[in-house]
Length: 251
Ligand code: GLN
Image (cartoon, rainbow, N blue to C red; front, side, top):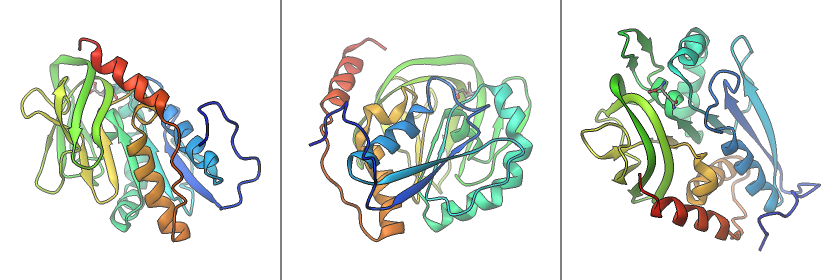
């Protein structure tokens, strides 16, 4: 199997996925862009290519997007992108409804819901892909998180947010926290799932430590585009080691 340091295939023979990163200029904290690098590398190890696209404020939205990734951002970054995000909201909703796989983290997770009411009392409207809402709190929720998920097993990551998210009936939680806060300080849930959208508070970035989530996104995108996914097992021992170390640390 491919080693952790092996080079990407030079000539991907099995086709290429178009991966769109939303607002990397304003919404990319705690290394969330690393999620895109993991997707690209796991494709390369299996002989697929990846075309990395970016959508920033003012850009026209690219066509033929196979997978969408969005990162975290400070409240101020969320304010900067809010108008542009509303302008592309119908497109994103259409893609999500159609089954396009998406991974949205923290600040972008919050904006995929109905509204983020900040601690300062400003309402930043969401784009209604996910039935959930977020309220800014006085407390910051910081530290290592371990959640259990029926779909992905244990999910590991790092949270740092003051917004607290509450799920409506239209979504399921991604998991239940064993350590850390997750969505809020009340209900033990972490993240949200809807169609092929995975939403989570967890940075780290998330995908290096959670290959099962990465492969769900890739398998879904590849099956939609190519009809199949050559799902070669990879050597995930480094990811396993990182999970073990993080799990052993106090929160
Ligand atoms: N600004 C949001 C909050 O603090 C999101 C932070 C983040 O993306 N880490 O709740």
